[in-house]
Image (cartoon, rainbow, N blue to C red; front, side):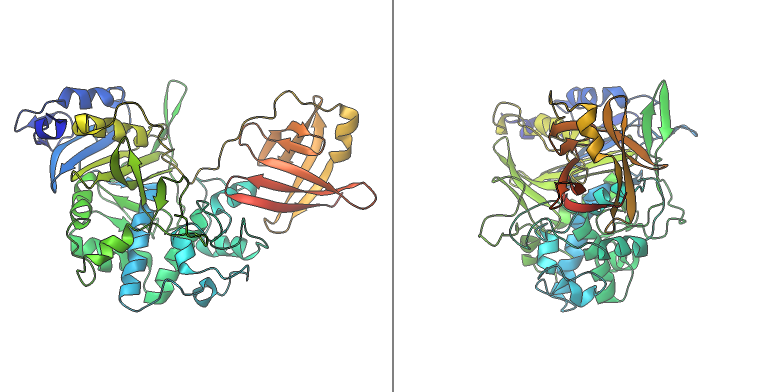
Length: 481
C-alpha cells in the first residue's frame, strides 16, 4: 500500500526537539534520519512541516534558531525565505489585476518610467521571466556590491535605469530574473498606494491568518521568534545576515505553521473575491511568443511566481529560495494533497533536496523509481560554467588585453593585468579574478563562470569587451587606458 496511507499524523512539541507521536507513523525514523546532521543544539538547521489534506502529519525542528542563546528551531520559528517570496508577489499582482488596479498587459514604463525604453515589456513578461531584463543580483555583484551590504531600492532602480540592452527581445525566451520580481513589487506599491508590507498584510497574510508572515520592508523592525542565519566556517559557524531592504523577489519572512494556511488556500481560495479561478491563474505557466511554455525546461513551467513540473511521475508545484544564511523550499503534490515545507537557517543546507527526500518518504510507491535531478534551491544564483580547460596564451599575447575598462551601465572600472603569467581581472578594493583563456580574445573566471569576449577596432587594437554571466548578458566595457 502506498506510503500516503501508512503515514499517519504527528504533531510537533512546542520545544522543537522530539516530535510527539499521536498515531503510529511509518517512516518517521526515515524523516529524522534525513535531518540527522542538523539534529543537535550546536548547529543551525531546519524546520520541517509535512501536510496532508490541509493538516500537518509531521512537523519538527532540527537544530538551533540562535546559537548564541541556545534557542531551538520549531514550527513557529520565523525564517527569511529568499525566492519563495515570488509566489506571494505573483499572487499580489493577480489580486491587483482582479481588483482593476492594473492589468497584466500594462507596459512596464507605465508604472516605472525611470526604466529605459528597451522594448515592449509588460507585467506579464515580468511574472513569467520572459522580459529579457538582466538579473540585478548579477549586476550588483559585478558592480562590487556584497549581498550582506545595504543598498536601497532607489540605488537599485538607478542601476537598472542605466542598462542599455536586454538579454533577448521580450517574450522570445525564458531566463530567470530577480529584476522582474523586484520591479513587480515596485509596481504593486505604486498601483495600490501602499508599501509591500502593508499590501501583503491587507491582501494575503491578514485574510489567511498568517500572523507571523510579512514582506520585510523595515529592516530595523523587531521580528519575534526570528531565526538567525549562519554560514559554516572552520570549526563552527558565522552569522550570515543582511539589512538589504529589497522586496518582491525576496524578503518574505514566514514560519512552518503559517505556511499551513497558504497550503490550504491553494485548494480553497479565500483571497480577493474568493474565486477559484485565481488559483488556476496563479498556477498557469506563461507562454513565449512562439506559444511554447515559459520555463527552464520543456517539462518545467513558470507561472506567477511558482514552478510547475513533473517529479518522478507526480505533478509538483512550488518554489525554493536562498539568500545569505537561509535556504527554503515549499512544494506541493496537489493530486495527492501532500505538501512539504523545509525552512533552514544555514547557507549550505540543501533545502530543495531535503524537501524531496521527505516527499519520497510520504509519497512512497506513488513515485516512479530512480533519482531525478533537482534544480538548485537558489535559482537566483548566477550560473556556474566549466573552466576554460587546457587552452593557454603566452604572456606576450596576454599583454594586449592589459588595461582599464569602464562599464557605464554598472558604473565601475575594471583593471586587467598580468600576474604570475596569467591575466587577472580586478575591481579595486573588492575582488580579483584570475582568468582562464578560452581562445584568442575569450576568457572565463573559473570560480564564477563569467566570460569576457574582447573586441578590436578597425586598426586591430583591443578596444573593449563584453561580459556574459548567466542571467546578465552582453555588458559592454570600453577600454579607457
